Length: 204
Image 1: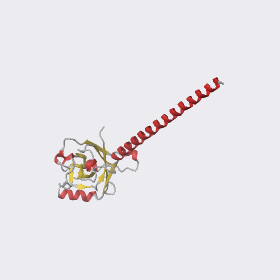
Image 2 (image 1 turned 30 degrees about the vertical axis):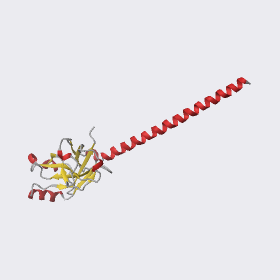
Image 3 (image 1 turned 60 degrees about the horizontal axis):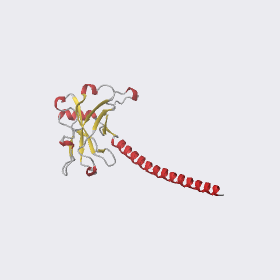
Image 4 (image 1 turned 180 degrees about the horizontal axis):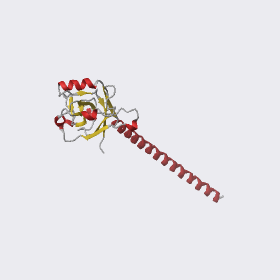
């Protein structure tokens, strides 16, 4: 009788121990789920941060004609953001090039604008910027896109947070993005329209 009672008590203790282990495992799972949720959110934010903007430039013949009348002409895209609460940017182009690339190349660059979320963003603006002129071939596997990248410098004053009176701050660009000669090759211009994609990625 005593042996049976002892065995029952032993089984009860084992049951309690197992219940505690289950509770610990459940608590650990809650913590793990929370960590995974945070990581998934961060991954989602990074994905949005690196998402690209595509600038459709219509009427490019007229753009070039205007540039030939005034070689300092610059054209700009509409503003866009690197994410829901990201940097506010604009893409710029000098159709007739800049400096040593004058009258021979297209120059592309990015501009910082004063945004709604500047107070919570990291400054200076430090990103890898990739410009892609999309070849409009019907078959994507045959496209010969023009791709050039640059890395903004943390020591460059133009990458600092825009001031209260700042409208647009021009960042360093790619002077020799594409020659006028090569612009006429492949299918970069179709129906007098170009597509320029810009991606801003967090440097690794």
